[in-house]
Length: 340
Image (cartoon, rainbow, N blue to C red; front, top):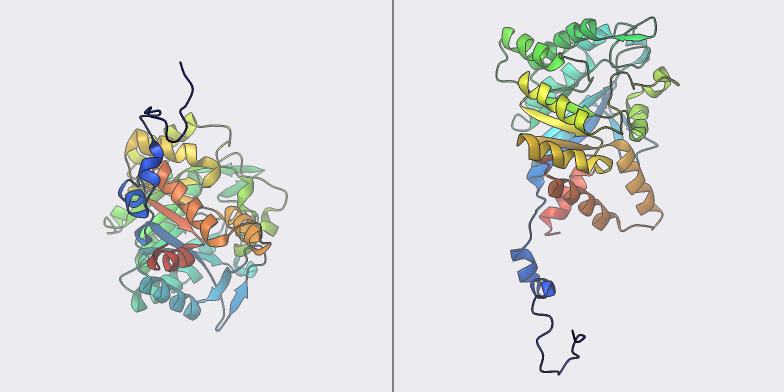
């Protein structure tokens, strides 16, 4: 076989040229396979006690813990940007933390107050509430702890109470992130029995015992409670993929309306497998460690912040995600509105 011909030769090598479809901007847009839009974004926010409090999270540059009235202002700004939903996480006063996490199902706890105020001021944005005990327990675990063991069924009973008070406050999507066995079905039953059959469940179905959660634990104040403990007896082994499919299948069977993979970029293969296998609304969480890495690299001039963030978000869409929880949501919404 003769080699490639040089320009000007009469030959026709090669006949297939993928670069033809990349030549002009209009053509690149025509053949684009995946698109990121503002409709794909969910903005996680942190709420804390007080008035007029705007407290930076040191390990998450640009992220703040907000008192309730400032949180409501932030949610209103998100609605202006057409972001469909926010996920709100409480920073609980240490004095209210107990071994049993009783504050989790206090109908007047911080998260319930915040949800009521959000829904009163910004009724047309979706509000997602995490269901887990780690913001409320003095030991920092997502479940009840007894003699060094996390109690599954006893924890699920508490999670059901937590879910109902959040739904009563106006939460639109209950998001169990605890990884206890059977909790989705139990919460679905509890919500239905309490008259909240319309409230959706977003199951953290494949939540891994990841090293990428550190800044989040700083933000909600659970890192010091957990200490040197770990969550490997209930969160998934990062080495496993088939197990993720089993977990997702169980949650779907128990009544989950959407499923979640967490963390994000280190687990794109899981996102792809879950979406391909089940065809369910599949969400992904670009977690605090991912945010911190990209932010730090951009601050040091090692990455172009806008380009790197949008590329990372597009990778979730390419893998099959329907929605992305990301601390970059407001920036991404702005960039996308500008035609990024």
